[in-house]
Length: 140
Image 1 (spheres, rainbow, N blue to C red):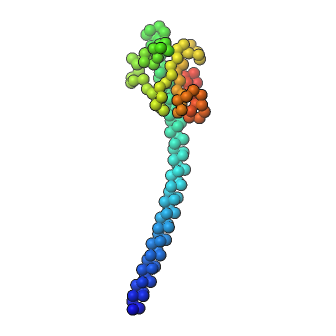
Image 2: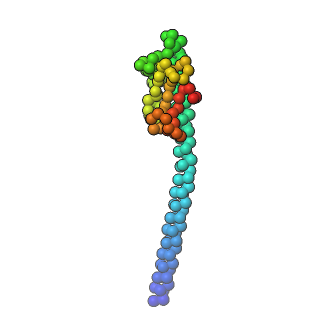
Image 3: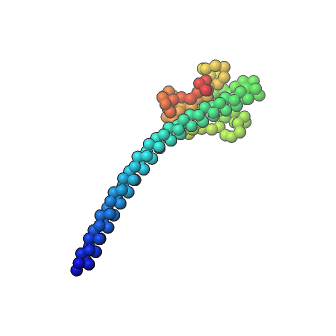
């Protein structure tokens, strides 16, 4: 009988230790989740910066292609001809901006002698702030 009592006490102790282990696991998982949330925010901020940089590079490439078009044809493509006229001067097809919106091409531009090439940012609408801000050829 005494042996059964000792076994029962041992079972309770093991059960108590298992409960503490479960609580410890919950604490560890919570700490990991908090850490991941903090790191995730910083990483997503870098993704936005990378998209802005990519848009600036693509706009620069489109403006360079427009300059090559002008050298060959004597003038920049009109707004109606648009970016499609630049395709022979690019290595790949006309890209969408990093947010999957088409670039806006205007010639004659309002900002200098060349065409205006614009990405309207993450929201795809004129104006905005932060990642929604316009990225334009005359601002590069």
